[in-house]
Amino acid sequence: MTDLEHFMAIRQRAECLFTFDETEQAIVRVAAEMTAELANSNPLLMTVMTGAVVFVGRLAAHLDFPLEISYLHATRYRNTTSGDTLQWKVPPQQDVKDRTVVVIDDILDEGHTLAEVERHLQELGAQAVYTAVLVDKTHDRKAFPGQRCDFTGLQVPDRYVFGSGMDYRGYWRNTGGIHAVHPDDL
Image 1 (tube, rainbow, N blue to C red):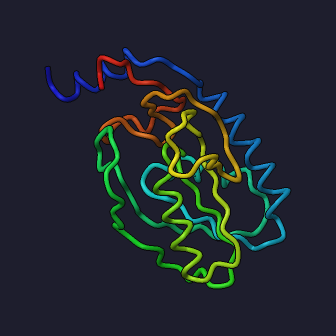
Image 2: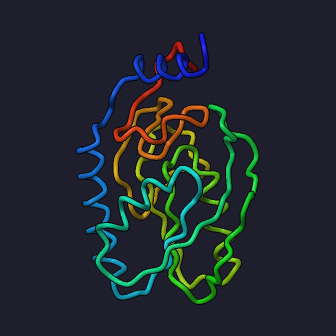
Image 3: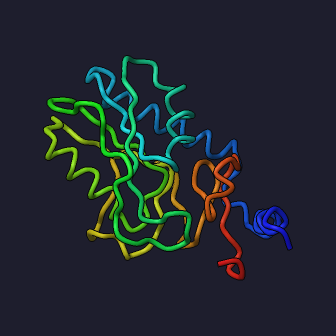
């Protein structure tokens, strides 16, 4: 089986948890919540690459107030299906001192990446740091008990998910909905 055939089979066996329309509805709701909280704060949306690029693109289209968008690249997964130590590929390049920063990520799984990014931005002098994710994975293995984001689109079960920016071994970020990998494919 070629790589292409393999990744096509992964997608075909996956379970659709949320359609594109359902994810879009969640993104519109998150945008409304962010607008209510942040419209007058001149926020900087700090996108965690690569997974959050789809989410921030879809989200920004629904935010009708002045903001800036930047990025950082911190990862624990490196195109695998399990996390490792945090690797900073690109630290924040834009000055965050005295700014309201919203860290945009694709998923809150165990929370190590978000916690480290949030801590780092506070050390750099951010006035306030908020977190926003498209999905929060439901389980009790969070880095910090009770860890939550300020803005969350959807809750997903404790399964490996892909789509809407999240990947399966580097592929399928472009799938519009959110899908759970079949257990045989892990």
